[in-house]
Image (cartoon, rainbow, N blue to C red):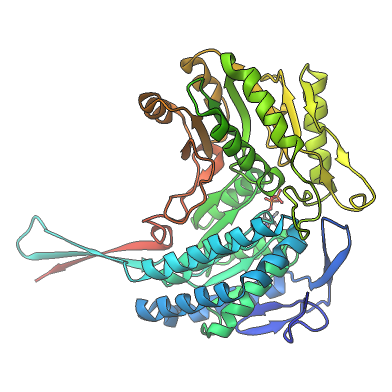
Length: 487
Ligand code: ADP
């Protein structure tokens, strides 16, 4: 694969005010292919100086951009959508190279990301204010929708393309300008996105890309009065820290944080379809998604059957380099990820869980330099184990059993997180009742594919604040301005 474009000759660069540039201090960091452990690229390591210049550029560009007609903003986003569609294969192969996921999943991520760009291009022209009848006959009342201002976006490595499109496209559709910091593990996908955006001709300063020292860059943006909003996807730990810092200037926040999704399998479900849905949700990106099923509660009477069928799916999954044909499960992002998954498995087994499949790092000749973990099935799991409270972020499925609806609802809700929850049943009444009782931002009924542009993606409690996508996708980037006139 041709990794470097003409714009990125010696080292991959930041994009600030329309110019590709290296960090002042000359520092660099390596990007690793998690399937091989090899260094695949060197990227300029920006810090406070570059972060500051980027936010100044975004602030300078904001006035013009916020007054650019919605139709023109939408046209540029449409162009970007088309560029993405023309470059699906290249973008997908970059994702697989730096994030490890199988190529077919990477392609789906690009298509899904492109949909966000297209959706937000459409929504750009649907920003409506309101006029309201006043109680005084001599008054006229109007509520305008205005962009909040320059936005700082910070994204994670598990969906290096999707997360960028989900944040950048609604922001610019709404008339905001953006400074983006992608995860250090996966900057190359964000660089490709910016190269395509540059070709579309966004005015200088409207979108800016800074990679490098995350705390230093984050601190500059959190303390900069030019930045009016922080949109973040990542861990609850970092999200809480950003929220606290953002409070000092009352910046708006949108936070998509961790999750611990329960999947409840009732005895009246379509068992085959349920096994397929849950295993797909679990193995997607090797279990490194914030909405993957983390606790599978199976009703006692069908537990043995469910476990047997699920076991067969795991045993037939092909683990390997995501760029190879036929790979179902790629590597984890790094060694830390492998160790975390393994520690959850060991803790569960120590506390009485039964290990039916997997349960170890895979180190055959072709995998030993990468970060592979075997798809794993644990039964006899209970709430005393770390795996039922903490995000594993690995291909590990823990099975718990339950007797009745009220019991399982209470156990499913016993988490500080509140992102996604899943119900599997063919009973319509039950599905509605249980969905209403579950305290989560998103509920999948016989469905584990929740990331779709038409939906409102986001969580409650410690899973975050705000929603991405859906009919209100621009709302988070808009501010109401109330205008009262005496005539
Ligand atoms: P993960 O555990 O999935 O890597 P993180 O929350 O650590 O999740 O990272 C998500 C994003 O947050 C990444 O872009 C990372 O660089 C960034 N990040 C991590 N720490 C900080 C920080 N102190 N300030 C700003 N951004 C941060």
